[in-house]
Length: 249
Image (cartoon, rainbow, N blue to C red; front, side, top):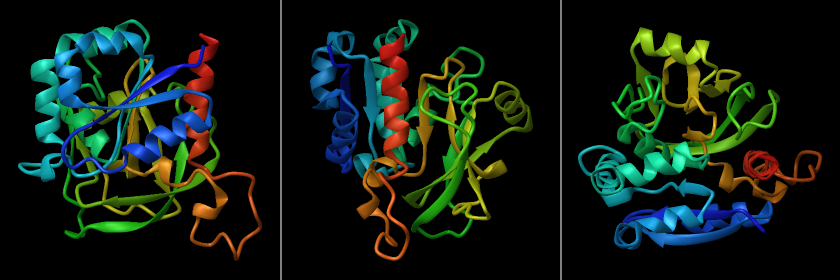
């Protein structure tokens, strides 16, 4: 049986099709569902092994990026989401989805509760940033990170700066929950300690600001005609890593 992925969208989400395609490219079956349909039938979570919250501008990013979507999830589906994770479910939040997971307390979840221990706020530049960045992963805990090799992915956000207290950062470092960092001086938003993505203590719930679903094929790269051809884009490796580990369990 192929792993089943639920790609959850809301008003303003705009990367759900690419995210679903990425999962299907690595052997999963993906279903795109509006959050209202999940609120009507929360048991649908039990029929899936992976939950994905894609990028975009959910609810116009009113109040703060991801805040309204996060409040909606935790007010209506908190118990179901926690049960999904506790029984071994995988989850990913990309860009706006990362903001949702952080502001819902599902990331980084260092104390095992759903208190918000970090945030994603305005880029230090004060402007929306759309560019490619280089990243280094830490594969010791996060199931979505295949290895520690440097990769390149695009970012597109105005509120991508990860901020947390010194105490929280120390715990994240000690627990290998900082799954992805900007490297080679490419930090696009002033994020503390160059943090680009974090995971929860299980390593199965992961959020990142870069867009892996936008670099699945080498032709997605802006320099694809000027550099030696690669077999695939760097982004697909993250999706494959998670699906591989899921099926091995």
